[in-house]
Image 1 (tube, rainbow, N blue to C red):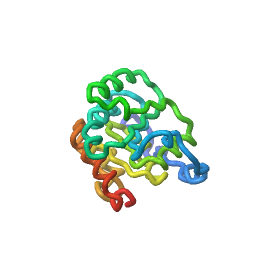
Image 2: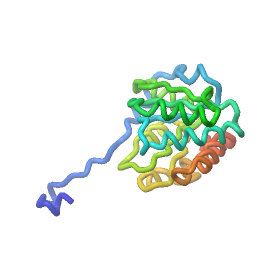
Image 3: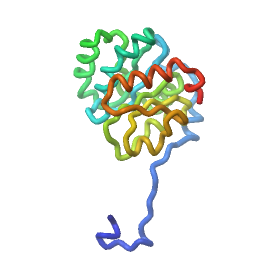
Length: 188
């Protein structure tokens, strides 16, 4: 694109996004906000925007809870504009008591949440690039994500995460249950 508008190729430098692994590793271990809720812990990190797929996760919750009845679903991130919609979906599914809205958390707490969670769920509908799966992997947290471009460039299904069909609560639930109930897969 830059070349098409007249910039010389040799003057174009691409700087990829990166994850500060040394920072993640140096965050002191300790109890996270998840400690007050029943396990296993299923973590959603991100804004409550439609493109992030929070609603797909909310609709998957009852299906997960049928197989893992003590799971807690922790939602952390800024922009709670759609929190009421999330709470309404959980209420319709009869799972409000297992949903926790943590709101905005600082970077250290985010790392502690990832370390103490049994999986990070990334049900995004589209991304230009998504940092939460890479941050979770760096923190040792298994990832369940939608199989869409960009995400499937980071995650190889069954190797460093689990990929599921986008916008499918049942596929998302199956991926979450698979990670929660398979300790070998979860540790891989």
